Length: 244
Image (cartoon, rainbow, N blue to C red; front, side, top):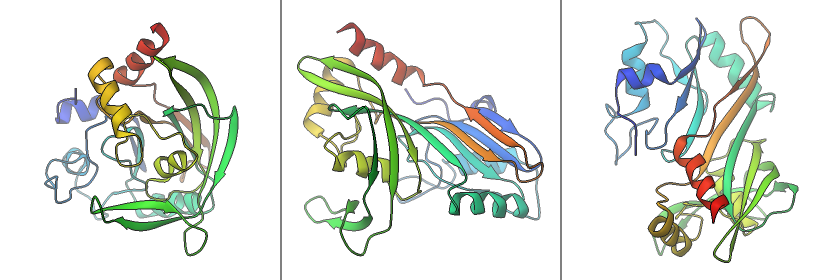
């Protein structure tokens, strides 16, 4: 169930705030920005603009999460903070750590280094990020397996993953490329398995969570580490697999 789209819920989900930064534990189901499917007033961006006092600088999210992905997202309140955070992202000095449940058994740890390029899937008329040998953008995802689970003949891997680069749909495309797509992801994953899990276990979204951010504070120079626990729906799904 998607949490109520209200100012009260937004404020409850703020995990860090000062004069430079605002960091939110975004629930799955909330879009960050508007598009043809979501009016601009029904977004996390709209809630944030209403929450923050007027300023000469227009605050900006330094990175994004898919609507169906939960977890930490960072917003810069000042131009100086945005430049500093973007610099850390560019030079891979910010750690973005995720937890994901994958369909299949991964190696205990690995590094996926596959360039990605946007291509049109003409059967579905959707844009996908696909691995290519030439002409793609360098992308790297490092991961380690936290737990191996089973359910009625299917194996699942709970992993911690670090996105070394920040390409669109990077984790979704990378894990699909090694044959272990994210559970609940119909775009890159296994729709038939996802439908079975929806029917039998109540799955209702892709199980990808932005669990931690680690960066240097743009004003103080101190190292900041923030963590967001797994949401209830993700944790409950894991418990169902463990009991099966």
